[in-house]
Image 1 (cartoon, protein in one colour):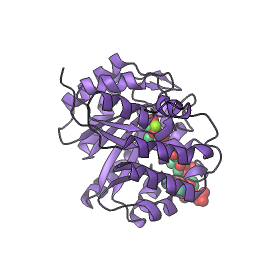
Image 2: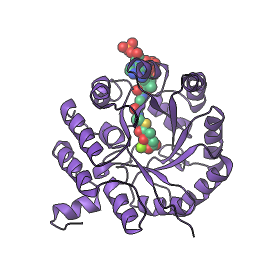
Image 3: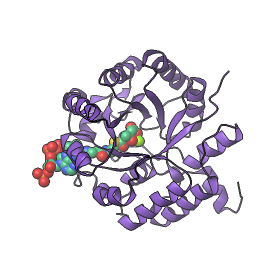
Image 4: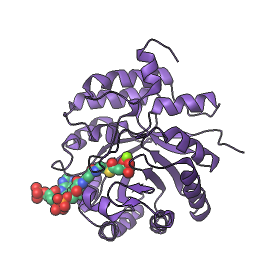
Length: 302
Ligand code: HMG
Ligand code: MG
């Protein structure tokens, strides 16, 4: 068994983490949270989304977040689902975009108000143009294992959608277990298949929600398949408002603990990361799904 020696954790707390929060968090708190995450030496992060403020009110301050937090030289992503989102991305002077599509068309319709095919038809020319302009394109593939509306998703359907994005020239594929239903066996099978079938220059990332406590096992299955990038969320915040039953992303600190103990390097500073969680916690209305942060709250230092 050969596991990666280093792993990159892409912090999705400021985007996936906060988008599902009902109370609107003040913009200055979000900015302080992002700055604290940067202090923990996190270099890749989803900062916010260019989506409809009517659909996701929490993300309506995206332009202010970008203005305050975007740092040249860092992979700071903004999500965009359509032409209007891409226009806002160009206008804000960003370099790293994350588009998102569901394998399951029912989920895509609930999330973006388009079928998967309609989204692909809109995104294909936009991605070609983004690449022609030298932008970094990350494609987030939702419901790669299971859909809250359609049930189990066929592995080949996920492989096929990833292949179509690869043909469009994306730089990264982030493949998601949107509602935390995947198991390590299926995760190993899908990610091994993607490792074989995708061009080597495309970064492959795992995105696991921890609804049923299987995210760490799924990450370990990915490591065995040779995957060395994971989306994680400080404090275990997260969830998609249009995916009923989805709880938070796996907590960055829980993944960091496991990787540290396995002597896999990430470059992330645990103490500073927990300070970032301290900062956002008073503004979150539900309890955090984080073992390591829970231990710290109980007085057990890690
Ligand atoms: P729609 O209502 O069909 O949009 O929504 P429309 O094109 O008919 O336009 C309606 C209005 O929205 C117009 O404004 C547009 O200008 C505006 P009006 O004329 O009424 O004033 N509009 C926009 N405004 C700002 N930014 C935009 C934009 N587009 C249109 N980009 C739409 C379609 C895609 C906009 C809507 O469905 C939407 O915003 N969806 C976003 C949903 C979302 O953010 N979901 C969470 C992120 S994905 C996720 O969490 C999964 C992931 O974590 C992986 C995983 O775990 O699976 C990535
Ligand atoms: Mg997600």
